[in-house]
Image 1: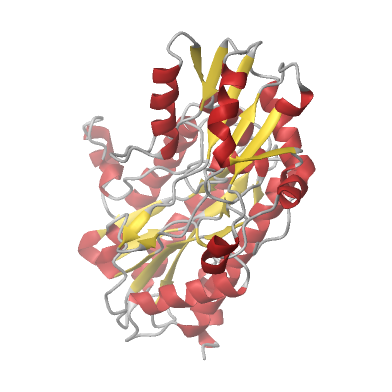
Image 2: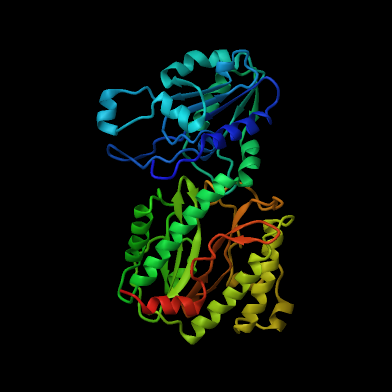
Length: 430
């Protein structure tokens, strides 16, 4: 385990909160993610199902959690199934968690091995009226891959067709939206590591480097500080490439006079950070670059103030788009008269600011929650206005992670964002 241990009370409390939301006589079953094949005899690095981690803290593959709060035997109200330790397997793959270690992490006392699951499942299911199953219901996600939770859902519906099946994801989503103190502590650590990575970039970046060299500096800082790695594929986009929103090639040379947009974030303890900065490759913004940068920064400062209880992503984005329109007029991209005549179905601002202002953050970089969710204290979202002028080779995005409160808290306020500070730090490059 690379990250500081999260108390088992956190995971126990999450299970208690979840079971209180289940209908009477219900069993909930949550499976781990697959070990995803890469090529040949290799798998991609394992990443746990965020819902299962939220309920147990267990990062190990081939894990199943069963919750049946009304089971007549107390020992069967919480059961975690896991890999049976095997000396030969551990010789090749390393240590697998023991029962005592799983109990210490999760607070679950009934630990069974995976090869016992099929024999115990009927005792759980046939006593229950309702079976709760969780699928990936993130609105941004579609896949052709029949992942483990989906395969299990198909199988159990086939085996027990007369039961009532319920969706587990909406219940866990409601819980995950508001972050608890333990989560905020881990998110802050992810933000701190992300800030350290940005500091390293500022010290090392210079004309003639390839974008992936800046990516390497970020990766270096993540790993040396105990992060799992990147919370998403990082973007290091120079010049006009910054106008491609999900540019991930990171293979162009960074030339003197260019801006480079860096969208990056550490994953620490399975929690994500997400940050964007736009810096001059040579250490000094040109007059036009600074003009555009300061326009985005002004909008960013105003937007942060909007992360208060009672609003929604949609409402906040509309306000930010109005702010961006005025800045675009000031930058000469269009006039107030043009604005009056625009097609409302194809607004002028969308040519230069075509993405959303914010998304939820947490165990996933694009965390659970939709655009109409009403903000509550304790939610964490990004704030990321941008400006993209492809003809001028200018792409600017400024992004921090914000904690919703009556006075919103910028969790990345310590990461340099003012142009003067960035220029001064870049003067001290190695």
